[in-house]
Image 1 (cartoon, protein in one colour):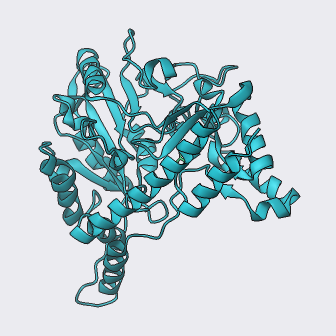
Image 2 (tube, rainbow, N blue to C red; image 1 turned 60 degrees about the vertical axis):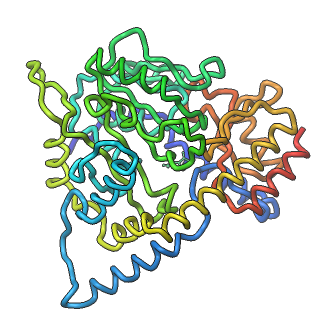
Length: 411
Ligand code: MLT
């Protein structure tokens, strides 16, 4: 009989969002009337149609594939040149950040990249993650056998947890101890916190000193409106020597279902072999894509490139303004009923302290039963998330306003 990967047996229950979906499904089956007025502010999934510029570009690309003269088969495994160069130019070089076209690798999304990247990293790495945290960072490491067993508090042996609390504004300082790999996500999912330039600078300094690697998830960078806040780790000097950046079109172009994202892997980034030899990671990442994948489909890459056209940019801006309008409505609604609210200003997530000492899942149940609103229990993001819940601003404005109305009746 074949052997299975026992690391999967270390994982706790289901992945958070399918688990929420299961509980909501059960509730809806038992309460069909309430189900009709259910509003989902749980998973951060977009609700608005794709920008027209992307739709037009994808249609045109599909049409091209239907003709002899313009048909294309396999594309370059790391992504088409037209998209890699557009990304490098518009997201980086136009902002005076030195990134070459071939340092951009196009993928089917940054959740996927979080898992893929472990292919090229050794299993000896000491890993640090924030708590609360986007569960994918932890679970992919558990699956890869980079952790020990789960402990009573839900934490895994072998991971260094960096508590994010109101005291540190949900942005942790680098640890005193040595780690090799640090996952950072700003604007943060789930807390909506954003790191300042000084805070990212401290992380880059730590990484340089410890020869550590920062995996910087910038999937929500487009939601930053404060001009002084950094949107890329590469805005920090020397980050090219210690960081990889992950980005996504999911929350900009509404591509959660279309699937497209990218990593930026600087050629100057080194990691070591067991024997202490320092080698660049870029060729390994390139090789990983050549062997295991063919990037994403041509129409999708055309759609992503169209998001950078003048019309595409305006349409993306309108989408972000729409979701951030919801964030304000939801934030204000929670504040009005005296809840303690964080995030939701430069991020599409609002992080809220549960009232009256309720646990996160108790709050989830009450919101579901009494208001018929789905939220995400903070404890699903880690031990430090207990006593909090996350409200996603990804919704129609009508739904956001209705949630605000219903919140007034809470208690
Ligand atoms: C979330 O709700 O945390 C995100 O939508 C999940 C994701 O982007 O994979």
